[in-house]
Amino acid sequence: MSSLKKKKKVTKFDIILYSISAILLIIILYPIYFVVTASFSEPAAVASGNVWLWPKGFTLEGYTELLKHKEIWIGYKNTILYTVAGTAIGIFVNITAAYTLSRKDFVGRKFFMLLFVFTMFFNGGLIPTFLTVKRFGLYDNFLVMVLPFSVSAFNIIVARTFFQNSIPSSLWDQARIDGCGNVRYFVQIVVPLSKAIISVLGLWIAVGQWNSYFNALIYLKSSSLHPLQLILRNILITNNMQTALGSGEAAQIALRRANLMRYSVIVVSTLPIMCVYPFVQKYFNKGVMIGAVKG
Image (cartoon, one colour):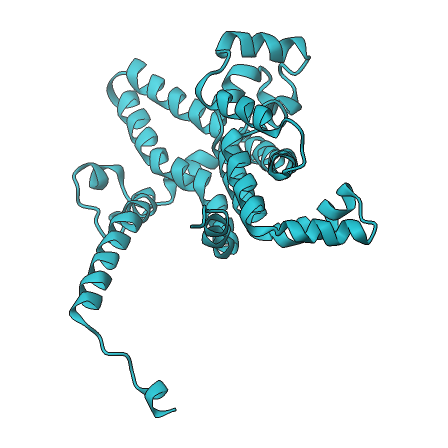
């Protein structure tokens, strides 16, 4: 017992390791901190490099100017709907496909896996994809943001590896003896044992949906369907155009407004997803490592 109570001796290697970790942590976190600080600072102070640790010339004008645009709330609503629906559909299609491909008794699983892997390197291109989306009646439709691009070969590979390494085949044998079918086995046994990988894929898909703007730019025509990222992009482009086309005092006002909103846009667009991340972080490493190839 006495030996267990002894404190672990800190070695030089530990000091070096902790120092490197602290430096890397600062390198990663400081840009995020700087963006938040700059969003509350005067643009002139940011441009002159005087903003380091604390806001200089504290102001909320960037946020007030940004929130004057009513379409931001429409974008928030659309983005939340796209993220929730897209994540649910993405988890369903990728998890079910991955589980099917992980079953050794599935006939032709290597062939179908090859088809999924093939799409990681080759695709039809933008024009054929656009024509396909339009022919299916998904152009300028809510479903175009959550349905056609929900399948991810990478996510399927990660989930399939998880199922192969973490779900014993003996469970299926025992369940089958007890009269359990494939669907019931998947829903009642496999899914509860796969919370880690489901959380990881859910995080990946949710972040991708939240940050997505290119699909909306190509496939959405109605402004009422635009996600937040596309609306913020349009606001910044409009401000830059006003700055370029203006002259004299009007140009200076437009430039100041554009600089004020630049960092505010980043904070507004990333804050919600950053608040959600800590709640699923505990599953992140667990899910990836369990799904890793074991020697």
